[in-house]
Image 1 (tube, rainbow, N blue to C red):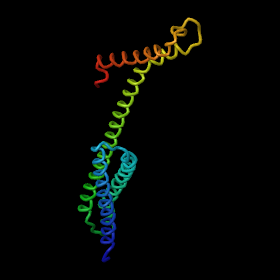
Image 2 (cartoon, one colour):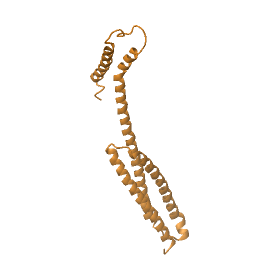
Image 3 (spheres, one colour):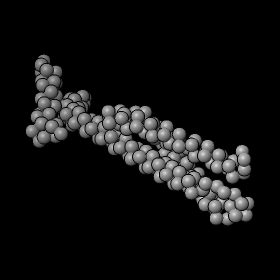
Image 4 (cartoon, rainbow, N blue to C red):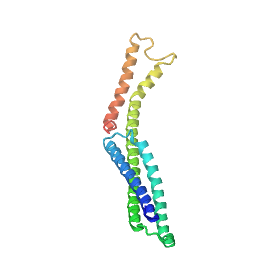
Length: 189
């Protein structure tokens, strides 16, 4: 290197190029995750998005420190050491890179929120199905519980077709509840 300023410029260029390549890689990963989310596959994206958000936060902090150091160097030390750095060009690249890293962080956060929303929707659908199935079988469970008691005076205990009539009551009560759910529109949702 011809001078200390050229060495410092080269080092900073390598650092900035490395962060730029890394941010391009992160953008590609976010594109892939977004495609998976749009295809309703949220299985692999959650962990990767958390890692991306942590990394972009760290990069943003490092870029803020680097920008501050360049600005401080430009104001304080360049005259003392008579170094002529291309600080305005470096500051512009750092500003642009910082904006890109912040936008990647925000994009990762939005994708993470979308995954959370899709997961909550799926959980709500599953809970609704579970509630409907539970509601359909609740009367049958009640009737079966009543006929399972060993007390005197239960209907159909002396009837040779008692089991058949008990099953008719069980199935009939479930069908009645199912009809009520369909009529009220709960099953159509």
